[in-house]
Amino acid sequence: MNVKASKHSETVGIVTVVGAGLMGQGIALQFALHGFKVHLHDTSTEILDKSIVAISDNLRLLSGMDMADGSDIPAILDRITADVSLEKSLNGSDLVIEAVYEDLDLKRSIFADLDELAPVHTIFASNTSSFMASQLVTNLTARDRVLVANWWNPPYLLPLVEVVPGPDTSQNSTDILCKLLKQAGKFPVVLQKESLGFIGNRLQFALLREAISLVESGVATAEDVDRVVTSSFGRRLAVAGPFEVFDIAGWDTILHIIDELFPHIESSKMSPDTIRKMVETGDLGVKSGRGFYTWDEDTISDRRSQISETLAALGRLDDAVNNK
Ligand SMILES: NC(=O)c1ccc[n+]([C@@H]2O[C@H](COP(=O)([O-])OP(=O)(O)OC[C@H]3O[C@@H](n4cnc5c(N)ncnc54)[C@H](O)[C@@H]3O)[C@@H](O)[C@H]2O)c1
Image (cartoon, rainbow, N blue to C red; front, side, top):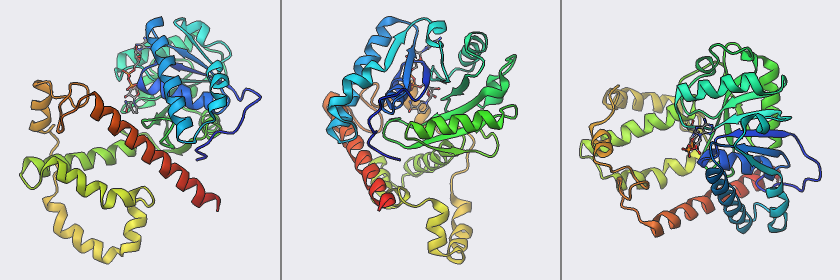
């Protein structure tokens, strides 16, 4: 991924983003940064106004990290219009990214509206974290133009978008979506068939299940589990995935470890007691000020900046290595 967008004098395409929350505003920023006109849609002008402020703040953050030119910010913001009318927001749209709450009925009703109101060439992509295109297209005529495009947060710092076509999605729709994503500086990976949770979330939640189990069984504290991950294989995973890492280690050795460890690794299908209790008592993490850590405004903002700066530095390093 090219971390720094090049200058744009012509519009690359028109993207409608439905839902201007955390993900929608980040996705809107990324497309506008790369020359697209963006129509941002949500249910109230208050939400849309807040989103535009957040986009502008995040653009300044990117400029501070040398990922956008400060002098381009007004032009980038000019490429974004915000409207509570879905119909107006779909005018001329090449691609819709749906980023409303993770609620299947809500998403289905949005897709039904898109089916009725969007131009006949528009591709409809859902940023859902868990649902599949086949669950979203019931009763739609445009079934061949619907698919999942799962971004990662923050959308302007993490390069991957997992693209998951459904059984009715046409190859042409998948190709067009991938082309637009690449033009927006993203790295699309297309799944060969539908899978709940796609690839990234399945892997991430397999790790989370084991991490919670280690804490619940008294092997380590949450802080120590986090420290082990970030200072060992977590670092390596940014440059080499599990198959490459273990190709390097040698599968004969790995098979011995698999035989010893797999029987002891957590495989429960139930949600862990610790997490259920935390949610019941309102310990939701950053949202409520307490999760496994205690949070206040300063620690939240410091940690967010540190994570963003590190991700930006990794992106620059990645570009330098790939362009050398
Ligand atoms: N937060 C993450 O890290 C993350 C990562 C990847 C994918 N996702 C997925 O992205 C989607 C959005 O998540 P988020 O974290 O941005 O949520 P969010 O709560 O921050 O934003 C959701 C937005 O949708 C809007 N909305 C609700 N109903 C609407 C309607 N009928 N029309 C238009 N807008 C409507 C809300 O007003 C809100 O602004 C979810 O499907 C989520 O699973 C989230």
